[in-house]
View 1: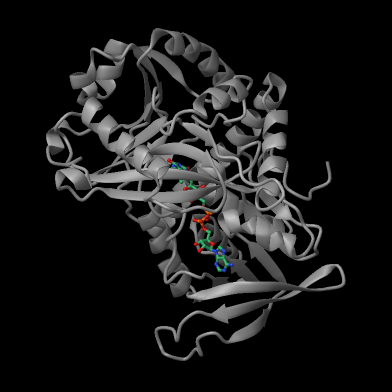
View 2 (view 1 turned 45 degrees about the horizontal axis):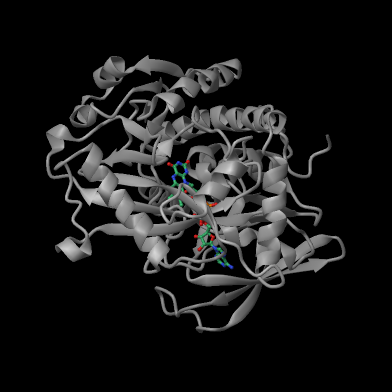
Length: 443
Ligand SMILES: Cc1cc2nc3c(=O)[nH]c(=O)nc-3n(C[C@H](O)[C@H](O)[C@H](O)COP(=O)(O)OP(=O)(O)OC[C@H]3O[C@@H](n4cnc5c(N)ncnc54)[C@H](O)[C@@H]3O)c2cc1C
């Protein structure tokens, strides 16, 4: 069958790859000049099957209220005009609140663990069959706590995860330093940790771009620098996609600004946060809302002192991952619309917090100098396609032949390979082997 994939982030490219594996003809439409240039560009790099707790939990509303006063807070709700662009934000917020209870939390964890396990296996298959190298480190993910009260709750969370087959162990401070000695310089602050040995880390951008090249080698067409203008329907089914050429293209064949219709048997929308506005044009309302996050990537100055094990800093809720000769720190979420600015006072406070934290926990290991100090920090921001449950929409929409693979929020890199494989199987008429509630499937 002929299938169009909208979006060449990690989700769209993994979708394309798995459709090719099943023998389909694939066209990918992407507005950027290459793959993974938006949210999949500089994320926390963690393949985090075992740390997948949704943001919505019973303590989240109170914490979010308290955090509204701090520019550096891990979760920041920035209210928009409810009679304008804020309408979808409020409706998303209400659905988020409805998930802030133990029953919903546990239900959501179960789904996320199932998708994570399926996805990890799919990632390993792709890596084994393609040989892609992307600064992968199969060293687990370690999580450290800096206050006793938070560490005391770690056991409860680990027990819940073990109930669903996840191997998360609570470890003492001494055990933590045996696993990752790099943080010994910060030993006076750390009270203990947890470890999930089967998790890993690696560069999502490199992986996705390499996979996109392999898709092209297998015959997929990538229409880069083409924006999706409209979805055209005929009756209750998808008919075609109207795409606009944004440039003349590498071979100079396109007329910039021109629009053409491309037809296919099926269309998969994998446009990250932009999936929701696109789907609304055909009357399908999905609660996918941008969750702005930040990362900073630093040159490692002292390789012998830099960590190999990918880490979560509980106090600041940031992920720290080594990518070759660089160290990436990423985190925080801001629910405040389609805003990609890096120069606002909130954005600057959040970016500087990342630099400061790396200097605190790994003093002198990286070049963390800010612009004011004469440095060139590599700050970045991306919009996580967040759902109120953290569970993505994978499946067929009410418009026949129009599929969705979006809403992966904080875990799109972790869930990318499996989500791509699952949607390809669904389109192919095969039921994916996992206990997951697919979008549009009968209960
Ligand atoms: C700070 C931060 C840290 C993170 N850390 C991790 C982590 O450690 N582990 C993890 O698993 N996940 C992490 N994530 C989440 C992960 O990065 C995302 O879930 C994932 O990148 C989403 O991929 P995507 O393909 O859905 O979206 P995107 O990568 O945004 O891809 C969507 C694509 O669609 C294209 N597009 C949109 N609209 C149109 C249009 N109209 N026409 C043409 N093209 C269009 C865009 O250009 C884009 O390339 C993190 C995210 C952030 C922001």
